[in-house]
Length: 615
Image (tube, rainbow, N blue to C red; front, side, top):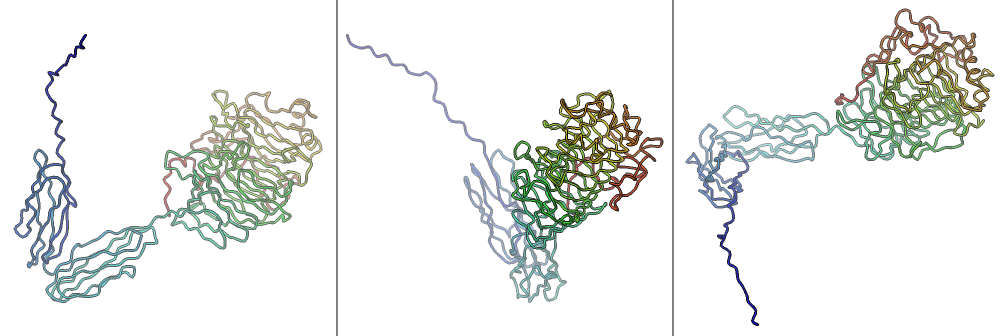
């Protein structure tokens, strides 16, 4: 049986592709020419038929074309003393016409009158001279040299060097044509970038100045023998991608001596509104003072080691410094802090420092003997002040304030102190002397809700530390004093670890002022009795409001100055032998403040919204 083939013929009409929309672009939009006759071109980009018409008889143009093309423009000599302009209209059907212009200089003229050039690299620009006779040209700036003279029509070639400053500069070129008033044309050069990238090693004597900003990329080391001097008002930023951190190694020095009106700022490289904890590594000082753990390498990733035998080792000066958004978590428990001081000696000056929004501890001391005054820890993640590995410095006027929403999974404390990670008896024993401290925790009062569960204690003293604290106030932590470990507890009983003339206030309940781990030498009751020994002059206050601080729990503008009638005023005691040292200033008040707020004028509580510029 034969196969049957059936064919179908479409009844649908053939479709015609849609015509694309007409396009037209012409560049450049305007050109300047000298007075002599010449030719100049404009580029047409189009997918359609176009026409071009000039409105001046002295300017003759290509009449039209199809698609992309060139408008060839021929112009005659301008023998007048007036500038003239020709407008050329380019038309494509269905589109608005484009108008371009040619501006022709007059006889005895110079065009253009100004040229803008970039800061770098060096280069040259030309000015067209239309002259009936001889002419001369002189620049008033050595960075811009010009063709000195000519006759008739010609060009002034202006050669300029790179602009090594951040400020725009202008060269005035005076062109004198015989018989007419001199003509001044200008070269305007943009200012250079004010950002200097820094990486690797800093050696020799290096100065950073406030007219530039410095971007630290990767671990950047001030090496042995080098001195980095930073001028007041200088802004240093850390690069997040490369974990920018500045590490002053043993034998290196940093002289960062700011002022109250011009503090030196280490901060995030992120723009306003996008800054966060951990945007860069932080600032690390490594010195040659004693530590109790050999020749250790600094934690967090840098190559540097620290420690030695020189108690008066000098790593330089840090004064009136703000450190913002630092602290990089290289791995768990191996973070770089806001300010890390490792084996730093007593010859170093640390005064008026503010660490804000640290991604780990605001301050941590690994051994060393460095002393410090006027330290602010603001809204950090982990501990405010952490001391380990034999640190034996003296500290006065410390202020910390916490954000109730932010705490570290490891447990956030005001003080955390260890002799070392194992609680050994390795010497030197960690024994910092703290005096005039105000710690403001996350809990203002009983109405404070949603406090981060990782908040722990105002003081966690453990692992054989012998920390001593005097004339201080700790308010608003969920727990007060946690005295942890048999050796530290024994040191307390024996009068080696001391807390004197100090107030614990506003814990989550009256029952949480004191705690000890289970199976301790001390019990909670015996710790309570020890702390409240009448001769120690310590106290507990249930409600923070009874401290009568001005506005201490205000995160936006904290003020921990005591008001009239505060129990902090007139109750200090400096008779303890640990305070008989010229470093300490004998005060009449408990806590970091008397009647004067020393944070005023240089501390900033909202660095997120500062648009940092150079001085």
